[in-house]
Image (tube, rainbow, N blue to C red; front, side):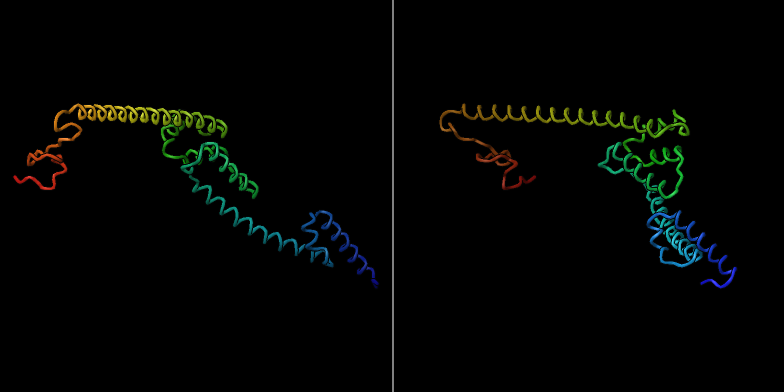
Length: 216
């Protein structure tokens, strides 16, 4: 029992304080302090827990900031996939209280792109005001440019394939003509290959296959 008026007053204040604290807590925080007996104990516990969480949050934020500063597009990434990866990183930073202005984000994205986008990035920087460009505008512009690059690469590969195919066809024709001429031989050379070596004039092999090098 409380023996005097001061004890009753202190008990009342403590009860009100505990009630105020507990009513404002989420379930995770409530579990941490429900066993404590005074409002001060609850408050100190929450402060220590918050400071510990703040240190963890700051450490995570520093890690995300470093990733953001070192952000580079991967060789096998498309523009859309790269932007998605950037968006996930930015959202994680914002979730920890970081405020990232869009112009700064746009500049960092342009800096992170592969070399094949350099000419387009230069054009954007020269012809546009980066302070007013939105992420969606940059995404649309770069996606269109990427499609053009891929189309040009496809056309080049197709043209190269056609050239190789034509060369193979010409070689086949030459080989066929050579075989037909050999088959037209008559007499003792019928069906034989009278190869002649120009080093020694002997029959049976070409000069390139001669086992002896011609002396000067």
